[in-house]
Length: 456
Image (cartoon, rainbow, N blue to C red; front, side, top):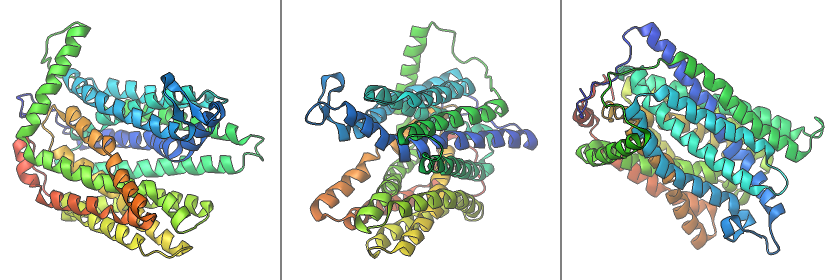
């Protein structure tokens, strides 16, 4: 029984059926990663900025909703709005997913809404910057909502002793899938003249491909995941009543969370060290260009290398977790991140080999530390409240990532050095490591009423 008195949705007993579901589940990581690598990380920011600049009035400002916004600031502004939308939306999606039990249908709805909005970016051209901004907000909100549902399925398809492996394989395939499509898209963009395309047409095709990739490969998890029906817990309600009940349930869950201090302590640790991880990944290309004076081609090759090394790293750290326990492996990965932030300060200008070596280490620990964090948290979530708690996890993962960039920005403002900016992130890694070391996983798992894994 769960902490709320509702029977848990246990994985099926047949290992072969369970493995089939797990293999299907992996492919949603493969499917949605294209949105992050191709759209967010590489193509949309520069392209949407160029469209916004074309629409800018004299003085280089556009006026969405009557608000004056500098053209170069429009994309960061849109990203911020999309994060705010997620912070407001994800807990509601999580509560509805748990209350209705229709997680597979909700995953399909969110995934295809995001994929459709991403494919719509193909029509972004000329001066229609509002179309691009609106579609990105929808796509990013749908992306986060789908992840909440997707993550919440992990305890339903994997036994406690399987979750580190399952989460790691899924994360690894995400890096591989996102990297392969990005590699193909970069080839299209680099050879756009030979293909008879303008640069803008090539970018639009790349954006379209990410949406198509997301939509096509989402078919695999939807075909292989079982629809889990439950004994009705709540009476049928009209839509307005169901929405009100969902909000009441969400309020109850937020109050209930205070009864699980180890869960909240883990979330605090994850907030800190994940913020450091995300900020290093964001600043590394700029650091390479402006501090180490490396060519853009070197940066692109390094970004691709990180994607493929992260595939192997996630598998390696997943294997180590089965021997030493996921918490110990994540703690060790944080020591590596502390080393990355420290060594970055001493890299030599123009040192391509040193930058490649740093990228290799980042890739090695990037996927594994995040994949194992996902599986660790799955043990600390009350049964039948998985989606609600994973909405808090997702908000922690995405909604607070401004903290690291804010601190790095202050360091850059004071010193004028990207070296100091990255070094300042030691605060997040050290504090996150200390808090994670204080988490008593066994006590937390017992408190929420979950089965104890052999190693944690």
